Amino acid sequence: MTQSAEQSTHAAPHNPSPVEEQDSLKALMPVIPIVLPVVGGVLMFLLAFIAIYMG
Figure (cartoon, rainbow, N blue to C red):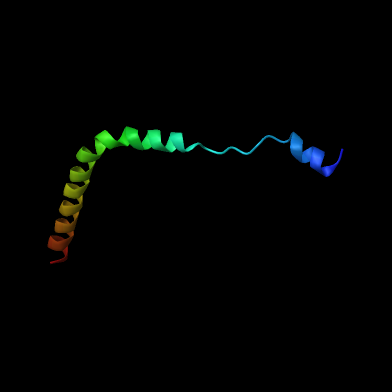
């Protein structure tokens, strides 16, 4: 068996299709308006806590 014949028998590498990435992003879109304010509130609380603790 030659080198080129051995390479042709191997399976093709897995290439994820762009459709999979687009579907996962579309799945997260309805949750973003809820998650962003919650994360912002937690971040403000932590920053205020640090400011009071350091002061």
